[in-house]
Each structure stands twice: as structure tokens, then as C-alpha cells.
Image (cartoon, rainbow, N blue to C red; front, top):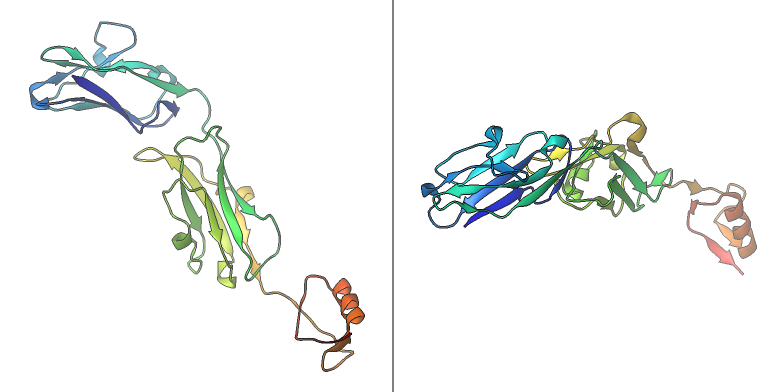
Length: 234
């Protein structure tokens, strides 16, 4: 019996995507000839016709709305018909991709943990894989983020100054991948600027000997500082 499969394994595609249908017969496929049909018709569609001594495929290199429909393939010998598969091409523009920094804070300091999130405005997201890019050869982002995986987030546990760079991402699906526009446009670029923490200095007192209330006053004046070692007097 003939069997029809689809690659990539999804039934809904955006215009421009590539899709291949494979018609296979168990047993001795070299003894079969293959034909292609589309829609509710018993007449073979000439532009889809293909013959081969092996299981053959029909490929749509750039899907259009007219490619939507139900396909099947009979294998000539006993004229066993395959199962039918419905292919749907959406008449909408491919979704956009954006790279988001979480938490959304600036500046970013050495030692901070940050997450880069490559987001596709596609609901529901189906089968997207992600690639990561940077304009710096010092950043280790390519080894931290796994290119071609379905993981849309990449976490840097402890940033260093070497991570100061511009980053962007790209989403794709299928094989070979149908890529969306990357988050490369200037307004979507993410610049990760790692800075050293500032230090508090207190020139009025030496030996860093302070009463507890004085330390509180200092922290109120210079919040967010990392102070040098202190001695406290209660």
C-alpha cells in the first residue's frame, strides 16, 4: 500500500516556504510507478505528474496559496491509493522576530545574569528553531546558545566585559530551513554593555570605621554601590 508523508512534518505553511511530499510503497518500490493527484478529482494533474522506479517526491520550492489542497499518490501496479494529506498555505506575511533582553535593565554589570529571548510573533509557534549571532569575536555567545535548536532562550549566568557587543537572532523551520527576517534591523539590535560595579569612597573618614546610622546615610546618598570593607560601631 502506498504511503504519503510530508517534510517538514507540519500541515500549515507560510507563503514562500518549501515543502516536499514523499510517496513510498512497502516491499519492492522499484517495481512501481508513481503519479500525483491534487484535490477532489480522478484526473491526474499534468504539472504534478512524476514517474520514477523508486519512491518519488513532489517538492514545492516556494509555497503559494494555490498550493493549498489535498494531495495523494497512486502507485501503478495494483493501483493502490495512498492516504490523503491536506496542505494549507497561509496567505499572510511571515511573522517577525525580535531579540529581547531579560531582565530589561541598563546598565548591565559584571556578574549579572541575563537572558536573551528570541521571540517570534507567531501564535501558536510551530516548529521554529533559533540561531544566534554577535558582532564580537570575543563573546562566547555561540558556545552558550545552541544554534538550530528549538530553545528560544539563552541565559548567560555571569556576564563579563567581554560580552559587550551587539547581538541578534534568527528563526527558521523546515529542512532546509525557511528563515524569517532576522532581528538584525538597527532598531531591534541588542547591545549588551557590561560594566564594572562602581565603588563608594568616603574621603572624610579613614580606616572605614563608621557607626551603623552613618553607613545607612552613606548608602542612601550612593545607592547601588559596592563599598570597600567596613568596620561598624553599634
